[in-house]
Image (tube, rainbow, N blue to C red; front, side):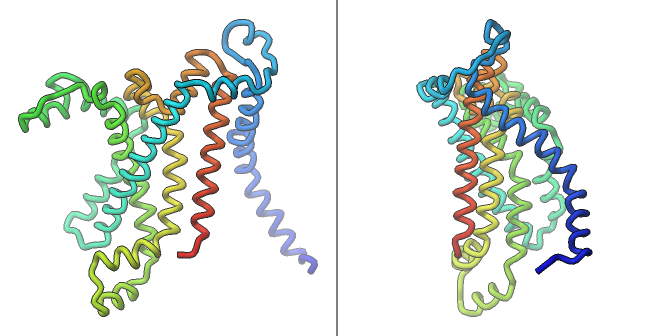
Length: 295
């Protein structure tokens, strides 16, 4: 069926409105991604002969990458970081916060403000704030707290580096989880809970049999967003530990930065970035496919 003049005009207007966003997407997402793929097949560098005359070297960067123990360490650290802070920490605390906000709390506004407050500070500012709290010595905030209870103090970022960055990133991401999960909870009709309550269902049964299944699309959406964004975390962890000590907190994003701008090997850094992009795409496809499954 042929489109009317009004429909064609509406489509043109829509394209005009979307054009600036499309241009920005091409300039800052699609083109850099394509150029990174190209760089990954070259020996591009910031110093030396490769900086003056880079050339194509085929798959050498990828062959080197899969035999690089530091790359696998960065991948493992990133996996633990994402699992601990995004999938477990932020999700659990965000869900608890969302459930709490559904109740009649006396200080509800204050509670939600406290949860949202970490997002007001930029990553680097939040990182330096936590450095003062986790530093060694008796004057650091956490050391004062544990010494008040008679426990030994420590240089927390040196003794428990990975645990500390998981805690800090969890603190910063609770608000996003709370907002998304609150939106998911609001879509569940109260009549379902009332009917279940009349049938004698306990709160635990209603949570397990009603809340979780009906919120599964929202949960999977949150998992997709949090997983991809946590893989890309850089500024917060770099400000806290620079990836140390001894690579204990060297996330894949920090590893890419170190290879590209500390070791000056842009081609190799681009190869790591391409693999990271592929991992993110695979996880994204898995979450999207899971979201289509009927609960």
